[in-house]
Length: 278
View 1 (cartoon, rainbow, N blue to C red):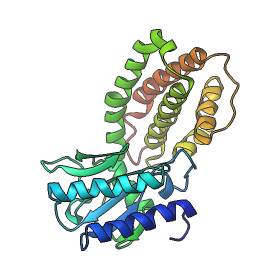
View 2: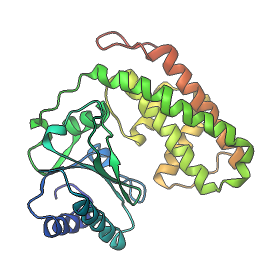
View 3: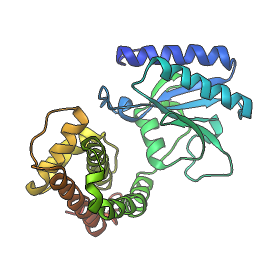
């Protein structure tokens, strides 16, 4: 598969072969999105994010087979993990959940639910990689850039604000967290919020690393060390900017609260076609 890392190709080859053997005449489309599609794949950090198109709703027994397929792949390849959802062609482009339980694989488990939003379809349409099926640009997906802004504002004030509040309450128990756990939280929060910031300013989607680099051009210098910390964690680079885990977590928390407040004050009403607020 052109342009993909060799080990990603190996995983996809084995997965697709196994899928066609165990669930024949079922898979009609398979698209890569996420960091691979955004040309920002990081070895040992990124997942293989995908959207699979099946031609029927799977039975309970078929879903168990699907779970077995993923377990077989993970028994051979611990990384990168596969992370994606199984839909039908008619589901593409939906912005609101319905009553259908869609199988999705994440974190080593097959679960059920609906996880559709404007960002998913925007990346698929503009950056997706077709492994099976028509090119993404030919898919019946039309996402107004304003849908991105509206989704991000809501997501920032629900998911991210709630997450930051939980972290703040947990700060008194910091000794219970390992350095590796703190690394994960810093990378996820800092780069995740910066991706939201980029979307609100530019009405587009960028990778985590791209969002970090973008922030150096737009964020006050006082925040640059914690942004660089998150970038280095993502890259697996050596770091020594902070004297303790508590210091860097405290800085990450302050930056996260600043980021949410800034976006609400200056960017949440940044409508398409109007100049960006500064």
